[in-house]
Amino acid sequence: CNPEQPLRPEEARNVDIDNLSKDEPVRGLNWADRLAQIIEFSSTGDPASEQPASVLFTGLPGSGKSTELLRLKARLERREEQGGANLLTVLISAEQLLDLSATIDISDIYVSILFEVERQVLLAEGKDPNDAMKDGIWTRVASLLDGDLSLDAKASLAYLGASLALEMKENPDIRLEVRRRVERSTSRFLRLCHTELKNLRDRARAKGRAGIVVIYDSLEKLRGITANFNDVLRSAEQLFAGEPQHLQLPVHTLFTVPPSLILRLRTPVEFMPMVKLWTRDGQRFPPGFDVARRIVQQRLL
Image (tube, rainbow, N blue to C red; front, side):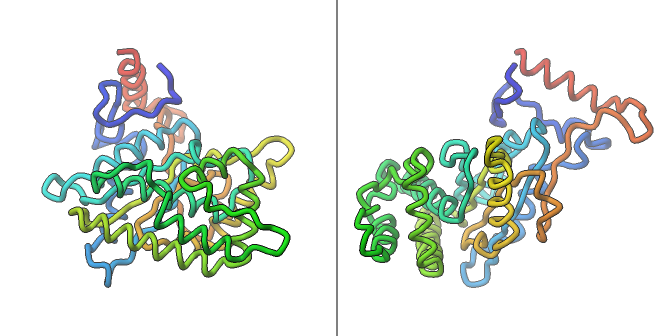
């Protein structure tokens, strides 16, 4: 009965909270449907006319965001005849690819997205996902960054290959070096990454998918430590509020964000509430208590 463990929709312990009481929804509405509709309405299947969705999503710790994102993933990747959007759905866990106790930068986000999207495209093509960023995409990105070396910095990033994303998480020196090089040629770096994502989207369409959606989970857990708490939040604010155009990608995206930032952002944020247990006038809300009991019962199966 680990409440920190997100559950896949098909698991017996999973409770579809938002579908238990449609007359009196305990979280206001069906959140997987809400998020899916935003993305589906933006998915035309035509690269020339499509305006990819960019969604920011948050909620208090323990509200069930990761479980609902797994439900969202399952819906979006279903074929259209099954009621889905037929998208290649790439779910990224920030906990696996980022150091959430350190400041964050656009280069961290782009490298991790390129890495995981290429892995999923290779899988769709029946190829080895461990070849992601060994050649091709990463060769071009690394060549750009290495080409802007200063005279006293001769270390090449290309040798890291597929391990770059993980090295950036574990090794702050490499992370800072990548950021320094991206800063020297930000516009070119972003253009190249956009080009590579478009190519990956086209490869996904060649395998019968309508496009790609990236769901970036656990970014709301950016919180730093005592010594750098404010610096980490400022870096997140700069990423999501200061230069939000950098997160407008040629594929559909959903980013989770820290709840503490919602009043500072100029773009709408989808905020999923906790299960409602009490009314505003202090009365018990029976559907909420029924759902809470059901969650505990299912977790103890």
